[in-house]
Amino acid sequence: MYCHLVLFLQSEDGDIIACVDIYKQPAFDHPALKNHTIQMQPSFIPSTETPNGERENSRPVVSQLWKKRGSCPKGTIPIRKIRRRELLRTNGRKSPEHLKGTKKIATQDRFMHLNNTKGSILYPTPENRSTAILLTYGYNYVGASGEINVWNPRVERLPEFTTAQIWLKSGAVNNFESVEAGWTVHPAQYSDARTRFFVYWTVDGYKKTGCFDLTCYGFVQTSTEIALGGAVEPGSSSFQQQYVLPINIFMDPTTTNWWLVFHNIAVGYWPGSLFSLLKHSATSVEWGGQVYSVNVRKTPHTKTAMGSGYDAEELYGFACFIGQPRILDYSKSYKYPTFVAVRKDEYNCYSAVNYKAGNANDEATFFFGGPGQSYRCP
Image (cartoon, rainbow, N blue to C red; front, top):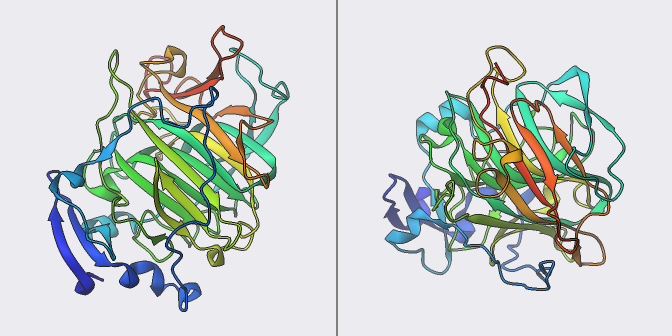
């Protein structure tokens, strides 16, 4: 791939960004994309209006660190150069979601009940993962969006990682197809503890397919402005300005490609030909955080944090949040989902609340996270 580069840029965090000919990117080594024609732009970008009818993001948006050193020329895409040790440690992939026999219950929390969320939902619990999410399911979803609050939580040891993200899924709980995007702190994957923008996909519940960013064949990048896996800044801190990563994922009806938009930038897409079920729609959407560790649901628990590291009940300015969660259906209009529920695998370790302030016109904001091991989570 690097034989087709046009330019190298050295980021101040040590990353090397290669500006590679767009037609020589890794995606086209996938058998399903052998004769693929690049879709340079989506046929439309759905409106992402706020509750007050404003289209512009009301909170400051993060940027990528490497952009301080320049940009890639037209006709190329920026690719973060992958270190050999990173591939040896993770192979660019998440571990499979092995399901345990026990099931947890997802219910709306004590803060409020939204729409039809008073009921309980049984769901299987994957081993080595702990999640705190807002979810909706049961319909045909062709898009989802949200403003993900950006922090830099602690990761205790390799190969643990923590994410704040959006998932669109379809299929069986242990063999699903998904497209995902958000931020992560993943030292095994990126060789440092910086907060980084990532994308992911799988067609078999992480068993044999899919990867982070461009470490395998699949995602087709079109933007010259965003490097997948690149560090983002600034991060949020307590009592200070809160920064967000606006994510918009939607299926283009003319091609069935799943497009990813970072703020107002169309980054690229997962080709519809990669999927069987997601070629038509997703059947569930999730917003929130996840910690991967062999020491979740065990004593002693991992000290890897989720979100900001603060409990969800600390709310704005302390807890990590996802604002303006939206789903897209075949009406091509983003809307707050009819049904939402809150799921938290380990409430004493990583909590979650869908909180609505006293003003009846205000929309709920989803808060999640926690420190991991603590006096409540030994």
